[in-house]
Length: 564
View 1 (cartoon, helix red, strand yellow):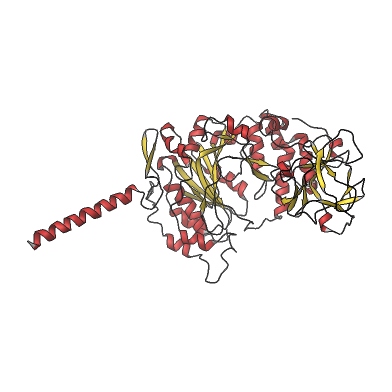
View 2: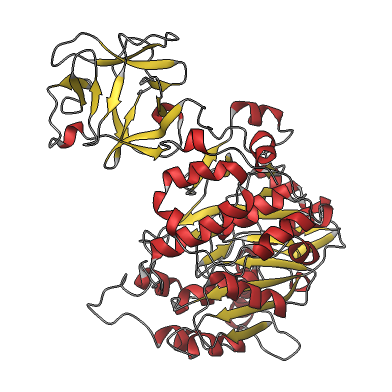
């Protein structure tokens, strides 16, 4: 009896193990949550592919991950941030692939059946310079494992003259990877142009080298380009912590924007924009893209001018491609059902041959001179140093604009970015009124209530002020006033009275103090916890030094708007 009983127990145990294995597979085997398949074009599609083997026999499984990452690990006691400006120890610990939260809107999970079965494949283009090996490897492997194999034609990896040749060459052992190396440092822009020239797929997808595409990230991008050949589309960019590498979902109610200093920022969608959207997962029209991650039709990319190859290294190229796309007949959109995580760093880990600031001013000045018409005066007011920055020849880019019959920048402001605050004809200075990292802020208060200081956020709103030729400091239809003419009197907002010069005139003096002329006292932040006050003027006092983010001077009168 012992023999048959033992046999039955073994059979029962084997059946139990089989059931557990099947359940493990159904739940995703430690990969993505929410099951392991969805469908598009009537086909079932795995959310992640355990392995991919190309026609040359290269596979992820055969790649020696430990050896590749281990060769450049941080030494015990070493600085994990020094080489990459993020925590390399945390990145290396993750390895080449991991599970991340599915941050898509629930409605995205029902859209796969709507995707065309005729989606065209893409060439994915990565460029990098001295990237952490674990980061670039994970970027590539995650693209391979979270994308349908038939939609990835090739992955083009452009090594921008990294110190270690093998950082890139060893990655040629991965499926579909084509490695290129610049013979000298070229920067992101020209490196991407090299990669695009090598690409053979009808769709180009550009990604940074420290990303992790999320579940079904690719199909929504390709679907939108399939529908709109002149659309340049970006995923929602989730955040990967530079310290812990935690994957954090980003808001889906944002669009890209900028201020007049040509600094990119994220703007919240207005209530009107939200109200006019038919669905929370439909494409979001955006005035500006961040620039690191986007997909576009290859033919449109070249027809519309690709990149400005005379821009250097990094920075400003997203302004140029955004202005050009909109003004020359295309569209920029953020696709909510596509999510890609990105490591955001606080500093650049690499050097700029001509310096970071100088390079950025050259690139943004090129964009301003070609595309912004007379509105470029506001850029120069915000960045006076850019006026003397050499930019090289602009002839080819201006000829491109003329050949494509592109619209004027006024059209862009009125139709694409109407929420961007444009200085009035009477404004001398405008923008944020700053003391270091703090800015004058209405704190949401209304007339006759105190104002204060708040961390500068560059999002306008409560921190938008303008100094006019009539010497009023204006916030929308309100003006700064003083509740009394003695030291310690509070500064408040009051309704502006047209033509008045007796109660609210302010003089912004050379020593940066802002003097209330009727009282002769200067605006002071020493008591900002309770109120901004006026005190006896002292040009040496930090609490009395105020700077507008944009100073127009005589430019408002001397320059007339130009339209191409």
